[in-house]
Length: 118
Image 1 (cartoon, one colour):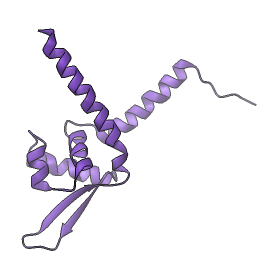
Image 2 (image 1 turned 120 degrees about the vertical axis):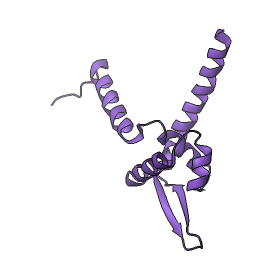
Image 3 (image 1 turned 180 degrees about the vertical axis):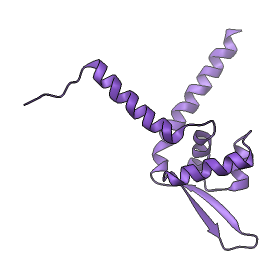
Image 4 (image 1 turned 30 degrees about the vertical axis):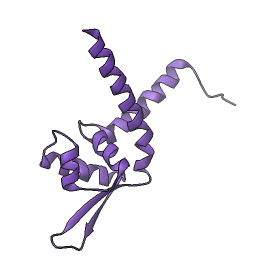
């Protein structure tokens, strides 16, 4: 009977593989920001365009489609005049809320550190 190898090198390899899997889904400049916004509330396209500073409309559309394909958000078309489209984090996507909060906390601390460096 073989025992599972728990060597640091093997564990590191597993962690790196898992990180690559996650980054394949979350890669790009905007996806984490979009997910973070949707963790707080359901938003329309224009709301997201205003909140995610610097993103173009074309890029937002592309990122939203990829997030939807990966089951992290849902797109709902309301039968209104004019048509309203809303985006919402899925239950699965909401599992990333802690990740976005940890990144936000780290970013805040890093900004403080860099500002105190001068």
